[in-house]
Image (cartoon, rainbow, N blue to C red; front, side, top):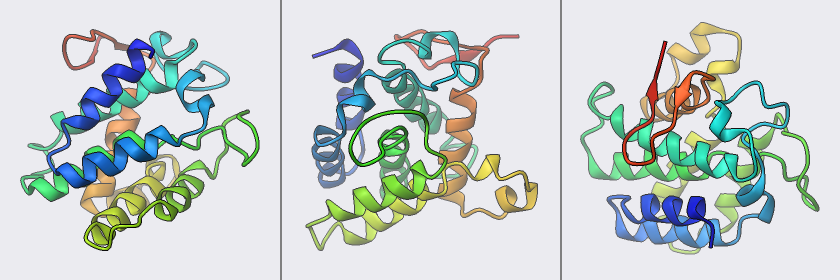
Length: 187
């Protein structure tokens, strides 16, 4: 097992809702192999240097989870179920980024929508149905900050905004990776 995979699964184990954490771990176990091996972006110019090589998408995903956790205070995410939804969506937001249904390739602009549908198909627990639907909503809309319309981003539901903001911050080229702490931005 790669270090990135191990660290991501450790982060997932820390999701504060045990059943949702297990759901995310099972869902990641079914993810296309490309999720585990692909760089964060095919062109390499939209993510930090440490996320541009093999396994970079997983490292980016870890960073998104850590940044999302650091935003809980700012966005006043105090409910543990809400925290679990945000962290679950952060873990799964790019799981279909390059998957076309048969093979892994270039980044798909509809990957949020595709991932949300794929995740929703894995929900077999009626107790989790509501939380999984919230995870899917956050995954579906995690690219809202790229919509080109600031009104769209500013009116997004709060949990979506946390995931979208964490994804945006974790994709900044100036982000420095320190696996022992939260990623930090440098000038």
